Length: 257
Image 1: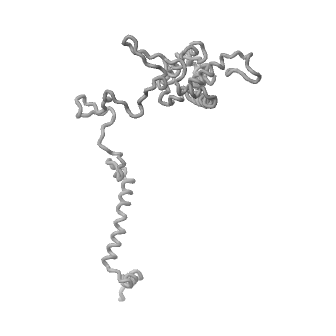
Image 2 (image 1 turned 90 degrees about the vertical axis):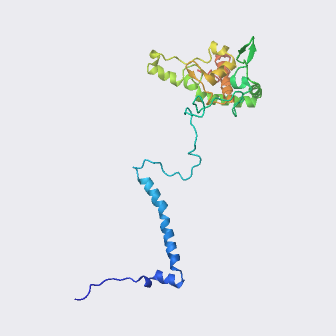
């Protein structure tokens, strides 16, 4: 009986082997090269395992830290280093944080500080700070400031007070439509009424900055110059509503007409 036919391959007869032998490459170097290629697969296999294994409870390997993980205390954490066990420390008396040195109270707060009979008073300024008044004295800069005030007013104020400042903004109109008035809804103030006209400019600025009653403040959204620009624009609306329609030139109309 003849033996079954088997295809036997002699590695020494392959083209690759003959090529290595032609260049006289040592076998040990060939083995190291092959092992290096295999080793490059290990990171890829680890990454693939980390992405596909959903049963792991440990976080992934964070190769580049970029200060993402660092020994620190977060706000409201407990720390045994201090007697009061608070990690969040109060400010050191007499220190001012960077960027918070607001020496010009009239510009940043809308009022000045004075001491009378041992009592600190903060009267609102009636007018504008020097740096704002300087712009209002220049027709070109005044136009830019009022344009900025109109832009910021339409973004932050008109939804409640209306673009004409009469207190009939879209939010109030919708509140009336859904019957919110019966549940305690209060119409936003008319910015052109006698009460708002009589208030100092600093009072209006402070209202924009810190809010008043049901209105929240916009101090975190608006820069000081933008707040003063809104004050100037509100005064412009008040002047527009105070003009007699009969005295307006042809083609002009009051804001609510």
